[in-house]
Amino acid sequence: MPLLVFCLCFFYHLACAIPQRANVSMPNSYEADVVLDQQEMPSLRIVGGQNAAEGQFPFQVSLQDNRSGLHICGGSIISANYVVTAAHCVTNEQGVEYPVTKLMVRAGITQVYKGGVIVGIAQIRRHPQYLSPSSINGDIALLRLTRPLTFSDRIKAIPLARADPPTGAAVIISGWGRTSADGPPATQLQYNTLRPITNAECRKYFSDVPQTVLCLAHTPGNGACYGDSGGPAIYNGNLVGVANFIIYRCGLSVPDGYAKISSFRNWLRQNSDVK
Image (cartoon, rainbow, N blue to C red; front, side, top):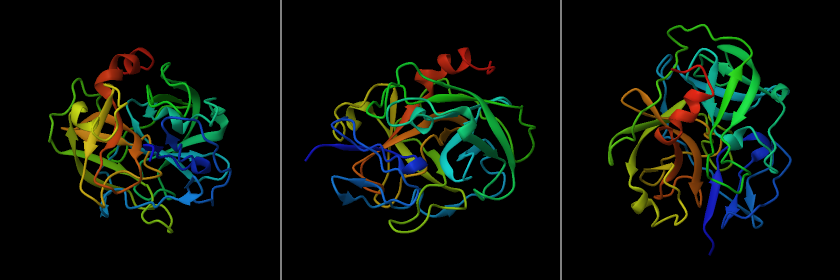
């Protein structure tokens, strides 16, 4: 059985299924189930069902479709003008960036479709290593906003980590990913604690994992799921990862893949106003 790696965005249900990192076609419907090889892939809870409190994750945003208003991916505020997310959240199945008019950011919320501030996207800049959904290299992107965010108790930037979290440390993830196989995605922001493992340990599950990926381990029934892509992994109040992919399917006892902020920190600073 080939290794299956899935990106976690919702837009057109881009499950980004990659058997041995080969290209696949994507269902063109918001209501379609995530399908690979004609078999429905279950979607389990992202984070074990813990609701985030108002203002608990003030840097967390929802990247949404500007036409339908539907949630696509997560993201993190890194300055008043910039959000970081996953590259596969802002590109189609051919690896072409979406028009900026297709996307918007909702900040300052825990309920994904209620309240907060909605801001447009002025520019998308993905990492040059990211070429298409068949790649997990450089799966990170910057969004320059059409206007600066006004910071408050519910809207704040998160610092970029300079180093990786220690193996086995408590790393927090958050997002509005799916809550059940047949049900809708979460409307209330969810979070959970995962544990980093070494890349050598991660390669027992995914032999091609690059050094730029942070692997976060968890017990069954936990971890990231569809809709959580682009969302944050946090350690000691710093952004250490951006949600990229899961192995096989949501909620198994295999690690999830996050882009290491330590690997991309210089690129993020060079292409934004973060100092």
